[in-house]
Length: 98
Image (cartoon, rainbow, N blue to C red; front, side):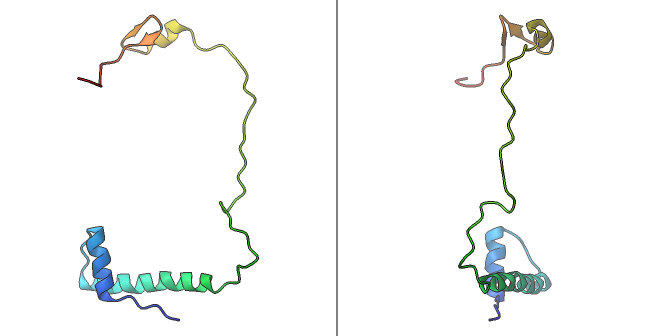
């Protein structure tokens, strides 16, 4: 079954996308969308009854490392990188309720 895209549909999609297409671009876009939709039609024809849905094309597993406690940077080294640092805290300009 061949899928036909009308120029009115292309113009509607262009309007929704806020894209201006010349008449030549509209014709080319219609042809491209018909090709894309024909690929979906081919996929629909495949026998998929015994195939489980996949969440990802590759198997995903979390790679985690053991949580090992170690010393952090000294406060004076951290304070050197901040324009304003007092009693172990970064001082930043107020941004809410101004």
